[in-house]
Image (cartoon, rainbow, N blue to C red):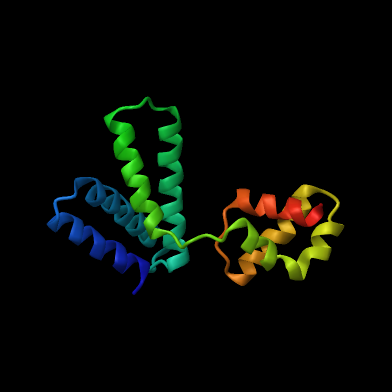
Length: 145
């Protein structure tokens, strides 16, 4: 099932369950995806839909960082949990280090940490691996050590 279809199915289930937070955040995601599809004049692929979800999640996290505790913060945390459930599971730092083994020499040979990160991210992206940049940075530091 395509990610867009899964989102729509979960949104319908949230409507039936009268789960306002889930329904609202998934409705926002569907709207953003439809806008992106209209701009691209084609249906988005799962990777592009994941990018939209990550953008909304990042926006929520930034809002949460500056907002005070309260009802809105609780709602944002609930929305973030829903958004996280849509994203592919990311690799752990140890798994990333293992995945970088084929390019370990290139990472060590890089002149700076930035170049080493570039080598690592390029390799992981080519492999289709889902990893958080902070975890990749820590794994690159271990490889360079």
